[in-house]
Image (cartoon, rainbow, N blue to C red; front, top):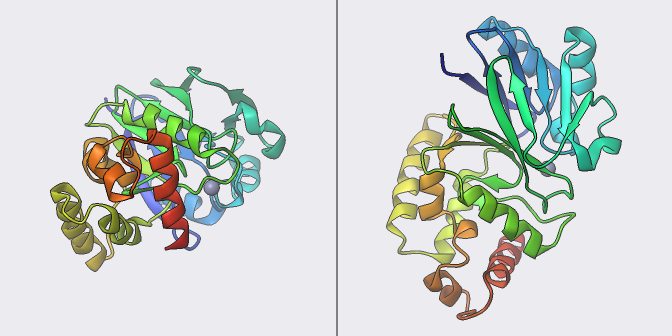
Length: 255
Ligand SMILES: [Zn+2]
C-alpha cells in the first residue's frame, strides 16, 4: 500500500505533517514545530509515532522533539551538518542516504542555503518530498546561513525531481508569495491560474500545501531564474542564473 500523509497547522503559520506506512503502522513526523498539535494529529489518525525526520535546526521545526521523543521513544533522524544543534538526534544523514519509515523508502538530498545543513527527504515511490524551508509554494526560504549561489544549487536539485512529486513545505506563505511573484512575471498564465486556486483555498481556510512540483516549475519565480524572460524582468539578461535568483530573493526580502 502507498504512504498516507496528514498535514496540520502548528504555531503561527507552520505546518506539521505525518507520513504513515499502512503496512507496518510506522509513522514519521516531518519536523516537530511543537508537541501538542503533533499529538493531536496522531490521536485523530489513530497512528503511533515511530520516527521524527528533521529538515533543519530552526526552533520552529524542532521545538517539539524532546517532548515527543520522551513520550514515544521514537527515533530522531537529523541532518549530519546540524547534529550539534539538534541534541536529541539518534541518527544523522547525508546526501543520498536511505531513510526508512516502516517499509517506505526515502532518500536524502542536501539542500543548503536557508541553513548550512538543511536537508530534504524524498520518497520517490510515494511521490512525496519534504522540503522544509528550502522551497515554498511559489517562494523559497530566506538565505540565512548559506550563499545565494548555494541556495540556487539546492533549488536546481529540487527542480530536477519529477513533475508529479507532491511538495510539502514548512509554512503557509503561498498567497503573499503569489503577490510578490506577480511583480516579476505578471503575465505568467500558470502563476495567474495558481493564484486563483490559492485564493479559493484560502477563502475557505484550506491549506495550499502540498503543491505539485510541476506547477512550481511553471509558476515559482525562484525556480525560474534561468528563464530568459525572468532575467530580463529583473534587468539581468545574460547574467548567471544564480545572480538572477539573488536579485529576486533580495527583492522579496524588501517586499
Ligand atoms: Zn527555517
